[in-house]
Length: 146
Image 1 (cartoon, one colour):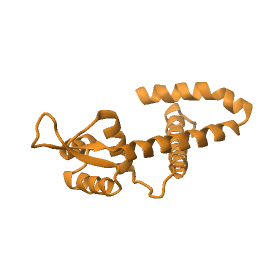
Image 2 (spheres, one colour):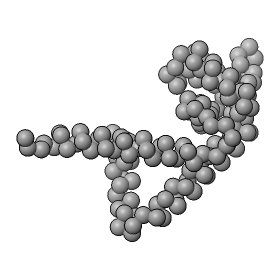
Image 3 (cartoon, one colour):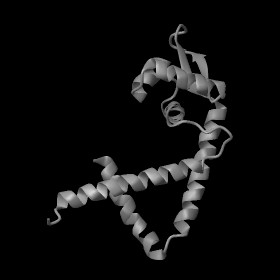
């Protein structure tokens, strides 16, 4: 049976997904810290870092999880002192969650370790592979935007 562009694209999509999973696992393994965080915990920390204080309900909606699941994630992050509770300045009855200084430091340290590992890994590539990186990056950015 002849190959079709659709079949080629489907196979490439599968191979790309596998490669991404492997790279993400490797990057995650390079994260420093005595307590590995789950993906939902990391996602909440990053969201609070970028978007600022949020209620637990708003976090649950933003992360597309049930409030009970978010409650467990928040409790774990609070027990590690990575997030804190604070009163909403606009509505003192409302409690919001905010990333702590320790949480910011953990994200910064994690990003630096991952970037360092990735830079070292890229430096070990063949010159032709490194030369191809700008095109690969452009294609990946295009895919991400579509």
